[in-house]
Amino acid sequence: MRPSQAFSAVSWIALLALAGCNPAANTTASNGTSPVALAMPLTTGAETPVTPAPAAAALPPAPKPVRVVHVTRPEDNYAYVERAYAMSNAFGDAPPDYGYDYGPTHVWAWRGRDNSVRLVEPIDGGDRYYYYRPGADQPYLVRDYDNSYGYDDTGELVVVYDREGRPLPYDDRYADRAARELSRARGVYAASLNTQRREVRAANWAARRSQIDAARADWAAQQSREAEWRAYHDAHAAEQAAYWQGEQDRRAREAMAFTDWQRRDYQGPLPAAIGARRGADPAQQQALAQQHQRDQIAAQVRLDQQRADLQAQQRQQQAEQQKQQQAQAEQQQRDQIAAQARQDQQRADLQAQQRQQQAEQQKQQQAQAEQRQRDQIAAQARQDQKRADQQAQQRQQLAEQEKQQKAQAEQRARQAQQQAGRQAEERQAKQQAELAQRQAQEQQARQQAEARQAQQHQQALAQAQARQHQQQAAAHPQAAAPQKAPHAPPQNPQAKGNAHHGHDHHDDPHDQRQ
Image (cartoon, rainbow, N blue to C red):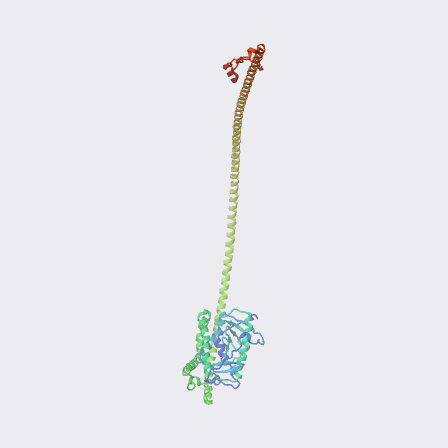
């Protein structure tokens, strides 16, 4: 469920106090008994077991969803936890006034002299605290183990706190838990009036006393760390102290008396500071009730004065607010006129600046165009010069190439001529070699022919000589037998050498050369 409206917190001390003075709301029981008469004496004996109440998630669903509202001023978010913290400080670690059963769970009750109520029931991991303004049957704050929920006087959810008392951002899941907690708070409170009251066992209070006091110390520590809560506390500390002073003094005496009685192992009668309003005889109860009535009348006078002072303060605040609003409206109007003038001047300045910028831009554009034109002319001249240089370079390169080609042609011609000369010389050498080879072959052939001719001549001569010898032998057979054949005439060594070396220049009848 989303937040539906805003809640304005004025002065929580005044609102709660005025509610406590409402005769219709101030009735604490059907017989009109006072908080003093409702207190029960402490009893001794062994500690009894504790049955914890269901956790928030295990509580039955609420008959109807809770509406969600918000405070107008963010600092008022701390009004609920600050009021509960002030009540807890007033009760301190004094023992409960009485106990009663709500289902299987035993609940403790503290009732202030203004008929404000704090109820405490055990849960797993701690306790659940219910805080009620005077005469109200539904709480303005429920403190669970992990969260606390602040409600306005119609039961609408205003704020959710974490375990240390810091306001949390809104979340849909908180609405369901807050509705379950609120429904149980109404039932627990109704049982505190209609169920038989029972004495609180001293041993049970001694066992849980430090746990309840530690929860109050957690709030105190967080208040010192949280700047916004501390600021709210400082702004209301004086009126809180004045409102709870009597209650705080009485409960402090009871706490000290209980500590002393506990040291004595609960021996002897109930301390007077505790028993003065617990289990007194009818005459004492009547006297206490009369004193309480006188205290209520005095409180009513003080509260009437506080209400008158509050109303005067509110009227003065309204006048101051109207004056401030009018001054703010006039200042706002002047600021608007000045802002409009500044806007007009800014607009004029801007237009002048824009015109100046346009003129500067035009001037820059013209200068840039002229510079571009000069740059183009210079670039064209550079290109022309570059082209001329390239052409001259190309002509020079062509001349160099032609020169190189001519030199190469001349070199090739010289090389060709040299090659032709070498080839001619080679051919001539080859021809000479061939000629020499032929001559040598011819010389050899002549020598061979001369040798054959000489051999043939020798053979022919020998044959002739043989025939001659044969003829002679035939003519003179007896004389021829003992005679040796005549030797061939010796050859001329010079002629033989010429035949081998080819130096014979005489005519040879067998030489066929032409």
